[in-house]
Amino acid sequence: MMDRIQAALLAHSPYRARAIDIVYNELDDLLLARRFDEANAGLLAIATSDLPLSLLLSALIVSLPWKAETREARRELSKKAQELAIAKGDNALRCMEGLLDD
Image 1 (tube, rainbow, N blue to C red):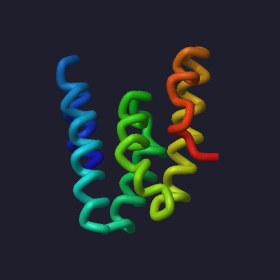
Image 2: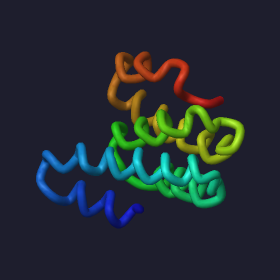
Image 3: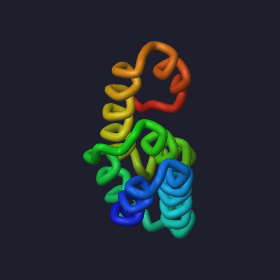
Image 4: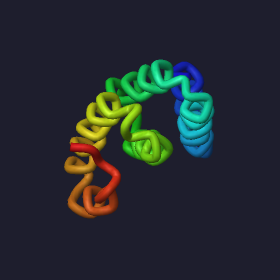
């Protein structure tokens, strides 16, 4: 998954939407198939990457219904997203209320 995300981001700017689709669709497929170990690994890979905030938010959104099964990975992803949002400014952080895990 990370290779496809990075390839989409390295392409021209319109491909950022494709990278968001990759994050959302691949995690959604894993979660719906109840492949939580793989989904958690994907969430952690995203959390430890240098991906833009929009991709982290996509991962947080798709995993929200599965909070119990992805608790630790979501916690790490939330920390990273919060750091990026703080760096972007107050409005970015406000948009994330209810999405972040403690």
